[in-house]
Structures are given as structure tokens and as C-alpha cells.
Length: 117
Length: 380
Image (cartoon, rainbow over all chains, first blue to last red; front, side, top):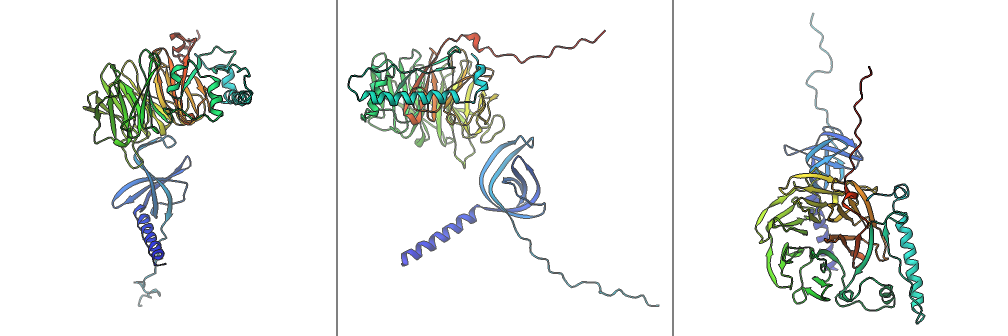
């Protein structure tokens, strides 16, 4: 029983570590759909990289997560008529939910001041 | 040489499928007859391409499955009967032919067998055979080539290099470099004394290129831009062949195309793309040139061989999926001798198929010029 528990725990930790190792994250700089793919330019730690995934709806400025599958160098997209130094083909793209903005206390009074006469 | 009109109009593989069906039916019938004692054995149907009434250009000659074939002139129906009767395969039976080379006179054939961890050398003139790797098995032998002295260069994929043996099986040297990750096809430019080693690479490596050595093993450079799909880049390349002018043709397998480079490594042209029309590929693998300069490419996915002229115009295909002698199942490597006999490593049928180019002259391979529009004369 103890062995089973240890095994399950070990597998869970290993799975977490593997998933953590493959997860990529960045902010969408530009995006385009073509020939059954969505191409996304992503900013990661000050650098920009291109990823290609199944069609997904993302907008510029969003933070996304993706699981890298295969890196292709010297990549030519005939449908876009464009050559990329590298393209990361990814399994899945997830949009990171943005943190809800809590309105701060306004600096200006709610009631407009009436000029003194 | 040309694609007959009815081939273009009919569904791609209908004809071959019909032949395969008839062939299997005939084999089954013969098997029943074989159990009836001294029943006469019907003459087996030998496949040709294109089918009659067109002029045949490629004719199936025979299969080679083991050293027992040294005493046979052709594949006979008897061998099919023996197989169906459950006869044990020969000790030296070919299982997974991944590399092929033939001597200039066509007498000796060299076959590397990935599953048998050996290279078989069959001498059809002397009726002798040799198994390189009998005492010390080779480590996943793949592509194979011979030089002018018939020294054997065989890629040992697990060892990440190429072992060289003389024609009697004596080990001479091992050729490798740190850059090689997964060697598959090899070719020797006998005139320029260069060895080409196709490095298929892996999913997480980017140096998908062809490494070049001299015949002693000194690295001379590489071909290709690395992993990619732009012109000159390669994606899991497998096999290679050298033309008499020193140009090399690389099977760019996962880009579903062939790429030609000149002797200095410059990109020349690309042939084919992914698709199922004539001239398109699924997974091209073995490549070779005949004496007219035509290009032959095995397609492992379509289980056939397509022939192109030197300009890359498709002319004919032969083969097709099946077990009947002459058909193929996931063929891999290909080589052509000086008599224009074409040898195909028929992987899942565990044999080497031999075909002969027939009724063909150099004129048949002349590239057809694209029609040029006549300049219009202004009306007076």
C-alpha cells in the first residue's frame, strides 16, 4: 500500500515537472490565420518568437500559454508567402485570464466643484 | 517514355490494384493446385508498366529473398507454393533490406539488412554468398554504397557512423564525426572520391543535412541548410544518389520532395511535393539514376517508384502496393546497375525486387520544352 502511494506521488510529481518543462508563456504581439493554422508572434523575456497552432482566437496584448511540440528552422509558409527563421509548432494555446482590475479610489471628487462666486 | 493517356484519366492505382487482385487470385489457385500432387504449374504472370497495349517500359524480372536464389534465374511460382506450405525460411533470408549496391557488371549485389544486423553479398556469377556481420553483428546497418574497388561503406546507425569493409568482409575503417546524429543513406562519388552520409537527424536536432567525407574519412563539409522546408533545407532526409556529373539527389523525406545539389553543394532544384498526383510524393526514400540520366524515386507511402527525366518531368511510375512478385509494401531503398536493372528494397515483403528498363532509348528521356508563345506581329 505504502509502495503504491509512493508510486502515485512520484508519478504526479514527475508529470508536474514534465508539464512545467514544456509550458511556454508570452504576450501576443501579432497574429494571423492562414491555411488551417494560426500564426502568433509572441514576446517572451524581451525576445519575440513565432508559434503555429490549430486555429485559435487570440488578440494582440493577450498573455497566452502553449505546449511546445516541435521546432522547425528555415520555415517557409507558402500561403503567407513568408519565410521564418524558426517556427514553433505547438499543441495547444491557452489564453491566460487577465486579472480583474479593481477600481482605485478616485483622485478627483465625485461632485464637481462649484466655483465660488 | 511517357505516361499513357489512359493512365492519366483512370484513377491512380486502379490498374495496379486489378493486377494485384488477379495475382493474388492466381497465387491462391496455384496453392490449391500445389496440394494436388503432380498438377501442372501455370506460368506466372510477369508484370510490366505501362500495361498493354502501351509499349512496356519497365518489366519485373525477379525477387531476391535469400542465398537460395543464387541458383535460380527467376522467381518461380514454386517458391510461393513452398512458402504457403509453411516451409521454413532460409537461414540467410532477407528481412529488412535498408541498403543496396550493385557491382558495375551487375554480378554482385550488396544488401544491408537492419533486422539481420548484417550485409549480404550475393555473387550471381560465382554462385557464392557472404554475410558481413556473421561473427560480429553490425549495429543497425542502414544505407550502403561501394567504391571503385567494391569496398563496402555501410551506415551503422547506432554507432553514428559508417563502417568500411573490403569485398571479402574484412573490416577496414570507421568513418564518423561529432556532427552525425542518425546516419541513414550513403553514396560514394567514385570519380571525385567523396562519401556522402545522409544524417536524418531527430525531432530535437536541427542539423538535418548530408555530411561529406573523403573516402578515408576526412570531413569535407556538409550539404543543406539544416532542418526546414525552404529550398536547400531538409526535413528528415533519408537516401542519396550521385549523378555522373557529380550532382547529388537527396530524398527530403518529410518534405515529400527530392532536392538536387551540385558537386559544390549549391542547391539546383527541387522535384515533387506532397500529394497523390503523378510526380507528387508521400514519403520519398531511395533514389537513383539510370544510364540515360533519368531519376528514380521510391515512395514508401505509395509503394511505388516514379521516374523523372533530368529536368524533373514525371514520365512513369511502376510498382504498387501488394505482395505479388513485382508489387511492393513500404519499399525503402533503390539502386540501379549499368544495365538499367532497378533493384528495390521491398521492406514489408522482406525481399529485393528487380526490374528492367526496356524498349527505351536516350531520346525517350529528352525533356519536353514548355510551349513558347509566338510573338505577335503588329497588324499593318
